[in-house]
Image 1 (tube, helix red, strand yellow):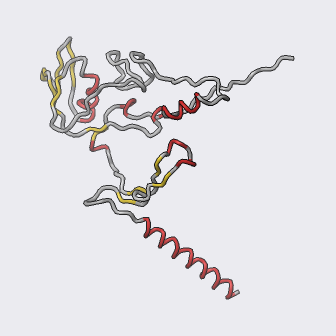
Image 2 (image 1 turned 30 degrees about the vertical axis):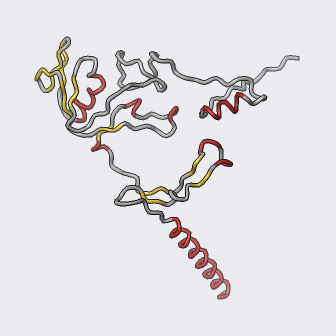
Length: 208
């Protein structure tokens, strides 16, 4: 009789150490590392220009602009900073042959008016981040981290290998001096709540 074989291929995110462990597993036929080759333009990759055939695995190098920093401006460099100059900093841009004009004035350099950041998603291979939409202006950042509620070592090695970083759990971020942990305060508050809840329910039960 004939039987259709179902596909057994899986795509997973691994460290080099995990890759080697799987290759040593007798139940696995093969493990192939998937890397987008250099020079092959990826889908929806900044700066969306033929000069830069980049992809998620082979990207850059780039310069991340800082306030008051000046760069040389050429037709090849322009695609990297066109959105900043035009959209974020409110200038008009013209290109005629090898000449670039900003606000009607021919120029071969540009000085940035604010800081910019490069944002990366935590799920590197499945994120639309700065690799898709480029630099983020400082004035577009409307929040900041203030608290770490949980932190582990060996996070990518499986839950059995997790080791809590006790000095980081329930710790403030930023501010002056050393980070301060509120983990003990949390445990005390949690214990107080359970004690209160126990006696409250007991009191209600006695009233009935």
